[in-house]
Image 1 (cartoon, helix red, strand yellow):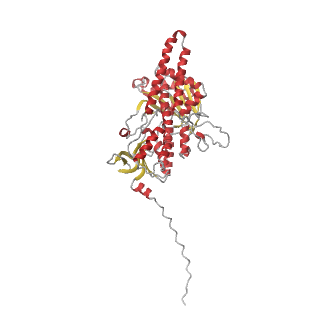
Image 2 (cartoon, one colour):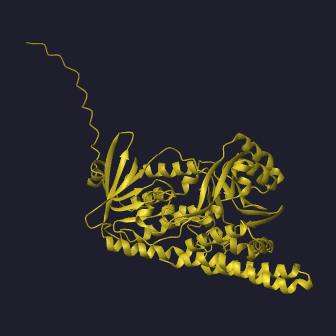
Image 3 (cartoon, rainbow, N blue to C red):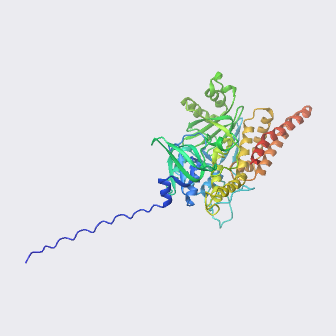
Length: 512
């Protein structure tokens, strides 16, 4: 009888991992470069819009010419209205881990005299309702207790770090393909509808084509597509020259600082625990900044440095000696309606204002918030329905004005006063500072507008002309009796100058 040996049982076969299901939409996006939306520019607006649309189930291709951390000298201060919008978009966590600094308001320094203008605790006249019990980035409150609103807060930070946080959030979305590629042209059908873009992938050495039912061009202040699609061109009459101060001793911590003196305004605000940004406005044709007088660097040393608070001067001088001075044009571009089928132009490519008031990112995030509703699948099931999209973008153009017209007009008007270059403007500048010194609603109103909290253009109109009337009264008070007839004529000139300053910007916002 043969001997039978019991063999040890063989181990069970290792189960293969379940196949990952890839949706047809993902295949079309990744293999065929077809999507619901193609967005050009992974900056503030482009990235946040991509995330927002992707979370609504849209397939998104997001194109950016360089995914390296940007290094810019603006886009570093987010007003409370922007913090609130960021939270509503579910992106507040992007402010974490970047050494962001809390901002509680502003300190205005007029020829050495300081006045604090904190963000208002109880803004009225169109304030944003609280979101989930957290008002404008402040502390959590219990809705069961009587409403006690803490003062809202903004955030300041290194622009590049914040952008990288937004891009990281985009890369975590399964409905987004973030691609490093330089867009060179739009692609149009025979009817003139934009159906996608052509891009050059320099690393791979090839050209690619990306198709979308809707193409969003958000390629920033230096947009290469703006001239093709809108009639307005940016107007730039000055530049910001930026320095990074190390361990600067600011007069008031957690506040932005506006320094007013003989020249154009200077902004100072922290962007990290040890870093402070200094932005110096230099208008075109400034004599002390000419090459004959040693250029901008000598202007900063001879004119700007002595006008700064004593506590800041040493760090400013060290930064000057370091020599890393960068510049950026300060541009004005009024908004335009979007009527090109298959395409919309957004962000700084479509609308810019002077960065003095730090309103750009607040406008961008609130635009995305509005587009989230207007272009939602419930409102626009098919983004290829160009007539429906055009109607929604026309609604967007007018609806956004409750906030953007306030920020746009305020930025341009305030810059005109703060960069005063004639006697009437200097009178208005003094009137503005004395208005702030009165405190109460004279501070809460203007800074509530600036912060993106108060969203009523008429409130801006009221405070601007209250400043003008106060400036006129100050002139009368300071005038000897024998000069009153001439002073009366001068006050008429001041009022006329106030009208000349603000009404062109009001009219530009009323145009379509």
